[in-house]
Length: 151
Image 1: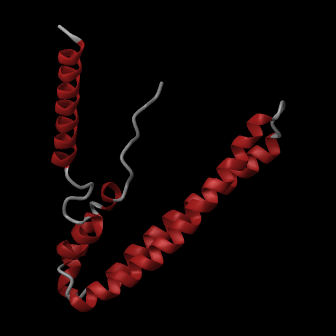
Image 2: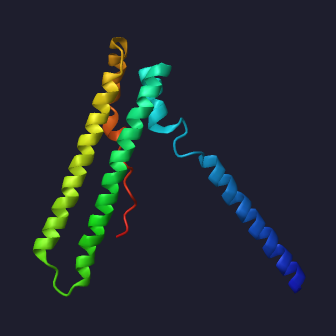
Image 3: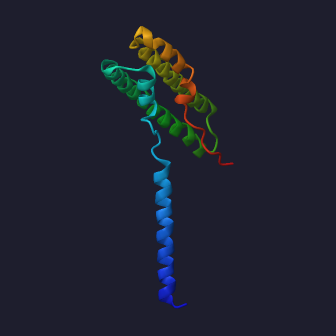
């Protein structure tokens, strides 16, 4: 086999691999095929147009507060792990930073809880049955999937 045929074969093989990869990527579809938790809540609670507008405001408030706390957690974790650069980590500083991270996480959970109380407040009486069903799914609906372990 001469070099030209070998090169042609390699190019065709790489093209087939790229097309297969592209097809698999497109086949998986979007992360949230039905619009994610937002659309699921709107559909499950049967929100009308006015309720959807109120819900959008609640989402913006929720995201702003959660994003701000996520930034604080990241910054505090950077400080915490920078302690590893020292020959002898300061245990008082370490414990203080870990406590701060735990406090931020508690605030996040309180914000999530308030968010769903706010959602409940925009429900009409006939929608409360759907809301009660939704509350049974909340923990898994909004939990992050477990990450793969790197042992």
